[in-house]
Length: 248
Image 1 (cartoon, rainbow, N blue to C red):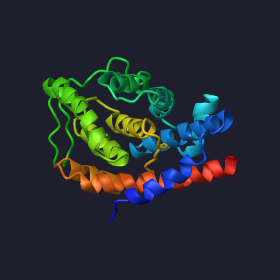
Image 2 (cartoon, one colour; image 1 turned 90 degrees about the vertical axis):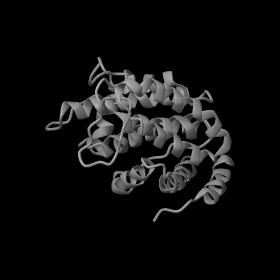
Image 3 (spheres, rainbow, N blue to C red; image 1 turned 120 degrees about the vertical axis):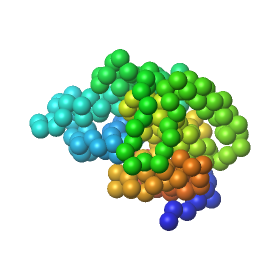
Image 4 (cartoon, rainbow, N blue to C red; image 1 turned 60 degrees about the vertical axis):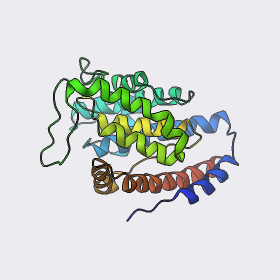
């Protein structure tokens, strides 16, 4: 269903790069747009009930939405703060275990401060899923193994393939009690930003395809997920071009 779009991605990246450097004002507008859009989409994929407009109100005005769970508001505020950290981390060229723990801590602190930034102490139980996540006692070793793989993957793969692998390998470890998907999407975007690509959003409308491709990666079949991410990146590039052409 999803195809590898790396050739088209390379062509669009060259077109995007022709607009750079962008003015500080345009960069700020783009960052604010993606803070809201990525927060909304990433939370919605996990069942958060705030829509895009409500997400904007919560982030920009600090208001609560009547009838919506407080956890949904806290997830929104936490993700927006984690997005700010993402932009800071994008100034470096590596992804460390400390980066990952800190992103989770920032996102999750308002929800559960005891578990924020700390690996889970219980096994993951996913009803009906054919997945064997590492046990808590294995998590430190698994995460260090994951981190140690990243430099070689970055060297060997196209940036988009690398970003997809960062996401898939991390989420299959599932080190935190909650928030693993959101952290996975943050570090996928960190891998993209560090290598000159724009933010990529996975829309809630393709959630079923996203989960299906991730399930394939549980069994070391990564190509469906790489293809899926490549199509998401391509669509994100098209949107990014529309934004900068409108603002320029």
